[in-house]
Amino acid sequence: MLIRIVKMTFQSDKIDDFIKIFEENKDAIRNQDGCKHLELWQDKDQPNVFSTYSLWESEKDLNQYRHSDTFGKVWPATKALFAEKPIASSHIQRFKLD
Picture (cartoon, rainbow, N blue to C red):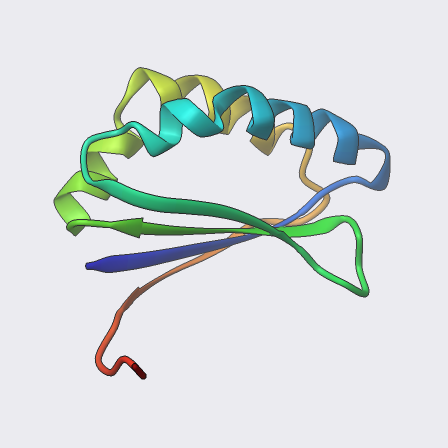
């Protein structure tokens, strides 16, 4: 399982535009092959900072999404709203508390 977190800082006046893009496309992202989970987080102290948290079966599945029509539509529209360069990181879960 691959955990992908992407931190995005938006122009303050573009927050609603981003939320609309996310709402319109979240199901298409969740339905990509290998996507097991998708969440959107908003920073509690900086309302223009959001992170996506997604779980993927494999890095191959994530990369297939990154080459999909959905990503080709969502990412350019989202990127145009940024105030700063996004920060992405991938993780592998090594220990799980039950």
